[in-house]
Image (tube, rainbow, N blue to C red):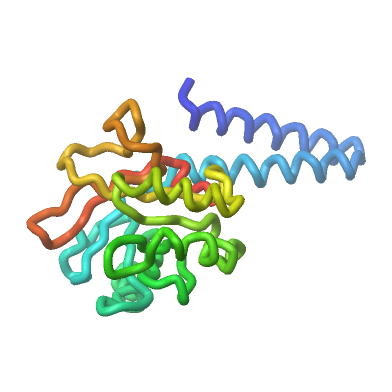
Length: 207
C-alpha cells in the first residue's frame, strides 16, 4: 500500500468513527475525530502537491502548464506580482533577495542576502502567512548556513532548505545522493539559460 492509499484509508476510517460517535451523541469524541480528519486531509494535500517547480526572471519562459512557480518580491527582477496573474492556479512561492523583506524564501547568494542575515530574517518571518521559512542557497553553502542558524538556536527541523546544485540530473540533495547536506528541494538544472527547474520533496510543502 502506498503512503497516499494508507492516508486515504485512515481518512475513511476516521470519517466512519466520527459519524458513529455523532449518532451515539459523543460530541467531544466526534470533535477529536473531526480534528484528526482535518490533519489527514492536510497530509493528503501535501502528498499530492507538485514535485517540480519552475522559476525565471522572464515569466514567459516558464512552461504554461507549470503547477508550481517561484518569483521575486524585490530586487532587479520583481516578478512575483506578474507571476500571480500569469499562473492563477499554480502553487506560488515568493522570494526575497534581501533580509529587510519577508517572503516564503530568503535568497542567500552573492549580491543578495548572506548567512549572517538568516537568523534575524527567520525570527521576523511571518510563519502564519508564509509557513515554514525557506532558505535558498548553493549546495556548497548549506552546511555553513545550517551552522549559522544552529549557533543562533534555530534547529534544522524549523526551516526548509532549497539548494542549488546544477548537475542536470533530477535530484534533491542529500549525503547519499550527491554528497551535500540534506535539502527539501533542489534546483538542479537550467534550460537554455532561460528557466530553472527544481525537484521538490513533499517536505517542501509541509508548512
